[in-house]
Length: 403
Ligand SMILES: *Cc1c(COP(=O)(O)O)cnc(C)c1O
Image 1 (cartoon, rainbow, N blue to C red):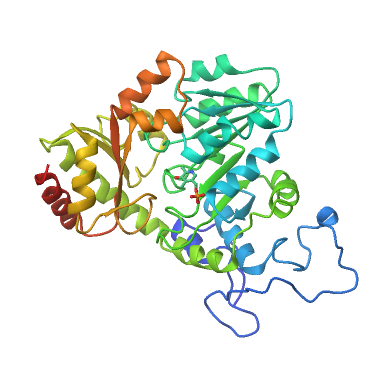
Image 2: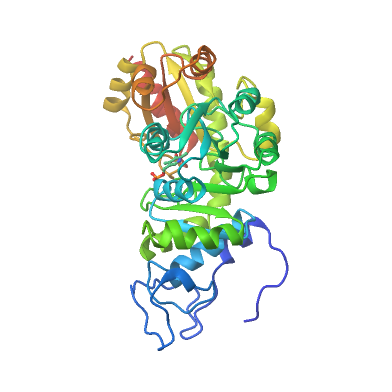
């Protein structure tokens, strides 16, 4: 076979980027290289300090052929120069924060974002003498007002977990770059089928591969995608040395998942829109939030920033805690479980009072108003799966009857 030379469409990219038939056996599907160490020559260095990008394989925490294939595929999918894979989304986020922020620096972080990131930036990161300001990043004035002379990073998530509130990536990139700061975007909910943050000006994109990219609920993983130069440094300092690298087996599973990712996202979004309409018309449902619905408070931004509205929606009922019990007990197909982005439908209830006490320390009336606008007293976060949409609706209908 000869090498691919022209730019490829997304379906071809997810199948072929980063891979090639095995040169020895001719195997068409990628091998899994589980070896932790590699036989090398007498010139190989023992410190990661002098590690070159094209160095021979030495030790799997430094680099591994299977993990490398995944990284090449992910960089191609996000139209980025380079990618570094991690054992989980949180391992990627930790490495990113410790790469971009040092003692004395300041960062602006979405006041509502993935809970572990929110909790880490409430306690652990400020403990390292890095100051954090939490703002509603959908409000551009709030970001501008939070800028300090030592602001090095703006960190956003769009749509954010769990509210599905959006942030204008292009506008925030401009605010960041005007003051010499970097912009990082957690794009796990959007996925590259909806949004390519690097093309909108972001410096780093983060994904939890555990979600849509892996897509099957059987492998944790994370990734940072960005410029070759930044990621070469990040790989040495906060990936290889801190050690949160992905297992080659998980890398292989996730690569296999990515091959069908564009097809799955189309189906997730189709199912989610049908279900969003069904829920909006159901008498027991008081509110539905889905970026693809005209009723989403930022539907206009969704239409320009998202080319696929993804499979995540939230809805509210009168007594969420009671409804959660009924769903956990009576649902037959939909799993009452955390996580998202799997082929299986997953639902979970998030009560506002709990989350505002544990994860999200919202301090201003504007922040609390925005929370209430999107979440009321609590939301069901629904990751719409790939089952037949009639079956998902029937399952919701029969569980709602028990309320
Ligand atoms: C799940 C998730 C994470 C964390 O990923 P893990 O793989 O569970 O560590 C980060 N950000 C978002 C938006 C997520 O949904």
